[in-house]
Every structure is written in C-alpha cells, then in structure tokens.
Image 1 (cartoon, one colour):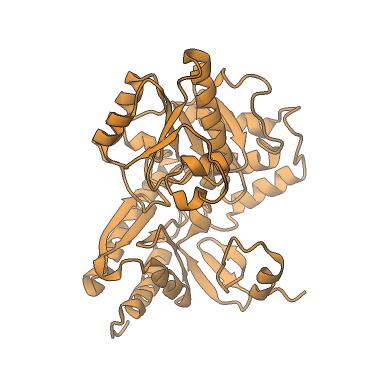
Image 2: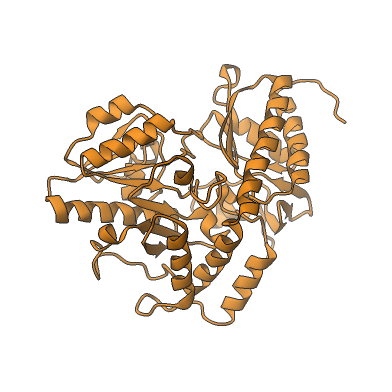
Length: 406
C-alpha cells in the first residue's frame, strides 16, 4: 500500500490537519520521515515522549511484559498496576491511585470524584466547579466544558452545568466567585495549551487557602506538567502547595497511553465499587512501561538535568531574540517552554512552526501567539544546540532577515 498524506484525507475523520511529513522511525530526540530526512524533535509528541523515541529500557519493558500478559480488565488486578501505584503513592502526597487511558479520562474521574465527595459530605447544593480561562483539561464533554476555551466546547448542544471560569493569576476575581457552593477548583499549575502561563506563588497559595476556607477540593491537572517536565517530579512540588486530587498522563507512559488520578484515602473512599471504571485502565502492558518511566525520571540525574537543559534553551532563545526581536518573553518552567511573540508578530505562531519543520525541526504552538517546546527530558545538549541553530534559520525566514550562518 502506498501510504501518503493524501490517504489521510481519504480515510480519516477531518478533525485533524496533520503536516505533510510522515515520520516512520524515531530514536532519542531525532525522527526520520518516509524519505529518510532527519528531524530534531522539540515537540515530544506534545510533552509525551519524556525519554525520547524508542528508549531501550522502555522497549525492553514493552517486550518483556508483552510476552507475559497484556490485558485482564478490572475484574482482576495485576502486578504492574500495583507496583506502579505503590511507586506513585510513595513519591507524592497521594495515598490512592485510579488508572485511566488518557489525561481527559483522568480528569473526568477527578471531577466525578469531587462531585460525589461534595454530595456525600454537604448535599446536592454544593456542585459548582471553578476553572480558569484558557485552561485545557481534555476533550470529553465534561472536561472540555471545564476547560476555559469555549471554541472547543461550543456547538455540541447543552453543556454540563455548574461550571464557571475566571482569569488565571487573578486572585481577587477568584475570591469573588468561590463560595460554600463550590465543590471543586480545577487548575493547571502551569497552563499549557493556554500559552505556557506560570502561576504566581501568591495566586496558587491564595487558591489553596480559599479552597480550604470553603471546603472545596483543589484538583491539579498535571497531565502536561507532571512526570519531571518542570524539573520536579510534579509541578506542585515546586510551588509549596499540595492539591487534594492530582491527574497525570502524557509523559507517564513515555508514549504508551496511560493516565492516573491520585488522591487521599479519605477522598478516594467516595468512589465506591461500581461508581466509576475503565475497561483498559490499569492494564499490565501500560503499567509496566509507566513503571519503568517513573523509575528513570524520578532520579536526581534526570530532574536536575531538566533544570540544566532549561537554561540552555532559555539562553539560546534569548540569543535568537536579541538578533530578530520577535519574542516578548520566554515563558514556562523546566522543559515546558514558550516563546511568546511580540506585538509585531501577533497571531503568527504557526508560521514559525511551519518554517521550523522546513528546517527539519519539530516544535509546537500554544495558541496563536506562542511557540511551544516540550522535548525529551534527556535530550542531549548537542541536540538542543543543533535544534536551536535550525530554529534560528526558521525565525530568520519568518522575520525576513538576511543573515549568514556558521
């Protein structure tokens, strides 16, 4: 079969518009397409390929478990799921774990748990959920409505009710909205899709304090920021604030689909037998791979390496900006970074992404005004340097500068 980009248009639902490039092989932080062209990967599968492509230990975990047991359903438990849950609870505030297949499903579980907790403790009136404008929490109808981008949730009929949004980093507006009717607050401790926006310490601590005041559960969506991405195992660890419920996915499986919700024993008990479930969630294949990911990432070597590599990126991007003057600021933390365009380039982030691909570099956008970088946490320094050289060529083309390169 001749597999081309045109075949996508023939056989796939048109909700995506992928690039013409079709990668067929990956190794570390490099990709190769059908023609054998090599690309440096600063996208990481949208912050998923936390250890790059085809990491030998993950390939080994996949192969070993694949020869033992793939799937059971939750009529039975399995060893990889129990080992992974124990390692997650040992490493975090969490005491109980629920496994899902994706970030959206982990968030769906968190929101259902929060509603059930409030109902059991306080009654039906305590049902309000507060989240933040430009937030992103998944594409199920519940999670996309909780997300703060109405373009993603409009046009599908009546939305789930009891959900309200306020501006991120605006504590006064949040304080005016939260009340004893609020059952949960869902927030990203580093907004991803919304533009790579970091919370101020005063804001995140203020949100925690107001949740405590109103007996409201605080849910941290760490689907994108978790599993080493910020240089901490989870972003909450660098903020001095502990949530009541945490969700994670993306990097947890290093490329294999898996999600998880972590919470305390007291909160978890409200998801009684039969109240929620997932046929594939916690399958032994996914859990075996995620366990190996966690073993590798949750080490000083990798986490400190993230902080070192962040500085390489920041210095390189700031040097590029000193020559082309297209970025307002470099945002983010660890290896979830955003180059926010200045007013002269408003709305043109995708042009930078397309130009980068032409220079054999994969990157992302976060909205129309931010070029996003979410590479492997163990990307070699030389790949960062070479990737930034390619990115500078891409920037030069967009800006229209005439410059010679070494």
